[in-house]
Length: 164
Image 1: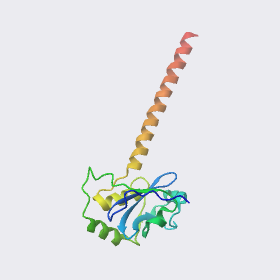
Image 2: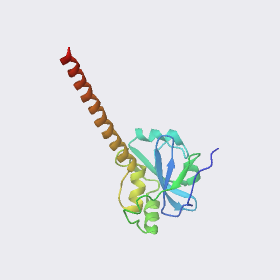
Image 3: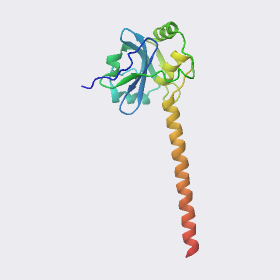
Image 4: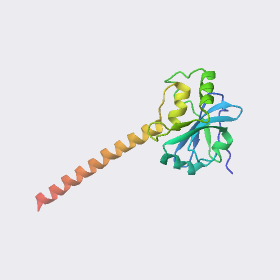
């Protein structure tokens, strides 16, 4: 079994990025080894790749579980990546808000209300997901690239017909 990567040691209120095989899962550390995170109603802690199925549901349960169990065999790290852009809310408020939500069923949308939006809302008061933004940007770049290839193909085809 792989050892989880965890440097630096989490402090209450820290964002935890868990490296699943096909995406990043996010949780917020609330102390004593526990995190609060979004999970599909059927998800088992540490489900790893199986939790990709969360993309197929429109509901999630706010759960409080041991970080070790949630990460399973996947690596994880503290990643308060927006501290330079946004001021974190006071730690006591982050934890209070997270704890109040435990057990609740909430709306889940891969593009606008996912686990990364959830933890950023708790820490900064701003729901955002860089994973979603990065996918949209990549799709836009791919679309422009395909359009350019199509245009080059059309121009090459016309040029070839004109020479005949």
